[in-house]
Image (cartoon, rainbow, N blue to C red; front, top):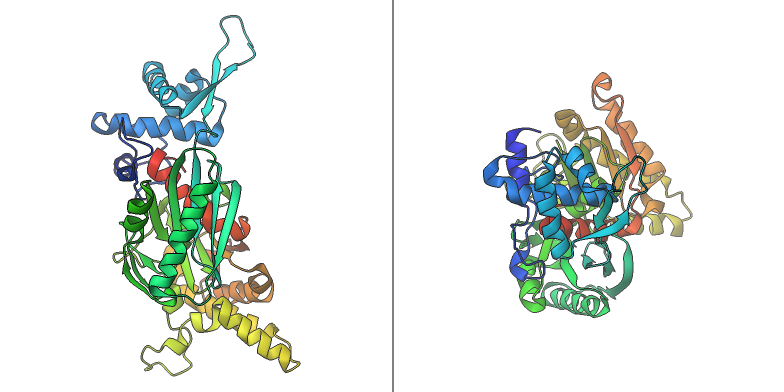
Length: 404
């Protein structure tokens, strides 16, 4: 890790004494910040960064002694003992008891993150027909869930459904809430303002601020595809540079490069659903909404095409295959530019897995230099339909504890 990476990791870690339950304690993921602290840092950033480093080690590995943590992090035993004492006092870390002694001497005391001390509220606004939410533990496991039908609501009516769902979820929690994470379609900036979400009729909606004021708890709102790629990174089988394509009411993508989430200069990295694909109208054609990727690939559009084909007694496979080809056309320049190691698809498996995925990878390989991308993998997510909810949990964990 470079010095720049280390400073980036430290900047978003919780400061000593920050209140875990305060609304002001919410932090998002800064651009370019490595998702996981993995090395000690310079003195001016040491306390907050090293605190996160200890928590990260326990969160990912668990059951470590103070000496184990010191060896794995490169921190001194005195520093680790001091930080652990602070974390024990705050209830964020617990002692599990003594390890069985393998050699003479006093057995070491094992530590772990206190995984039952707090719960997380996660909300997914990306489905085309409903808003979903869960109360989760610190490992992203759902403890209770709720949903509200969208019923084609937009604007203020859709916002009211979000606040009602969050209120219900808070009432279902059985432990103090570490924070509230929300994955929303559209372009979302680092303040949790939804700059634009056309399918929900939102523009400039300060959803993070609204929910924080309403609930008095830390809130992080992010793009749903960004939340999804964080879930795949933290809980899934992700390795290396990765792009996750989230197919739902619209289409978006989350991108992790060099261990950091990519936002873009206007927070619109991954908005591939609005990219014109193909040359149907010739090379001189100007931008048209009926020629963008979403026209072929969104869940409502795919379902309409499939229903129409079945009603006519026709095979729906060509519809899925064309959607996959259009996706491959959109992704080929990205894969070529970034030399990604894998593409992950997230959405209804009955639509994406099979003919659509096969057409996508075939198109990708036929439109990029084979020797540079021979190992490119395309697969379905391992996180299922709860991927955005679990990503919302990662948003809170990273913002409040500096772990992922």
